[in-house]
Image 1 (tube, each protein chain N blue to C red):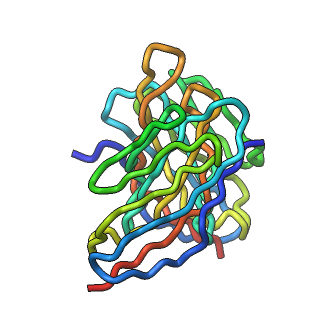
Image 2: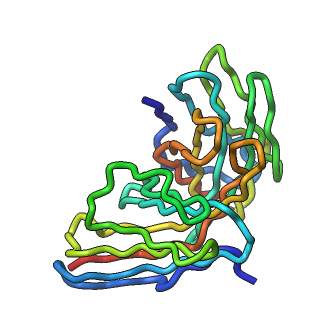
Length: 113
Length: 116
């Protein structure tokens, strides 16, 4: 079955540091890939997505590139802010309908001033 | 205006009780979902409803029953609550894209259920 593996947290960085959160996946066919973010006390919000190989999703300074050859979708940001502190979830959809998302276990990011 | 709302935000109850969590979306979306997030933040889909019809049931115990009175609401009723039901439950919704699929899922703020 489909699965998503994320790097284990928590991750603690200083403000303006470079961020990488690793995500690899196992899926049938050619899934769509997503990063969701969950701020404290809130529901998940879509951060970015990519629907085919070599696509790059980007939003709010975050980027992730769909790498079919390594089955990866690593999240990066060049300079994190305190306000980026949240839990980040990698997810995939191989159904083609986007109604059946499979999530990774989440990575807690804390950014210190 | 809140796009996807859930009530209550917190729910504390005893084992064996029956409880409901309500969800409403004002986005006009066609599909609604229930997810369970455990204490380790692992998130798993429970149900999905499209135009008031159940389309996914991911091996959830039959003590859990989704009820959709109309397209804007998907409530979750839980019978005979157990300790292992303690979790955060998230409702979500999405708009069909006309190609057999759906667009971005929008999540509610969650309901933290604690079973004592």
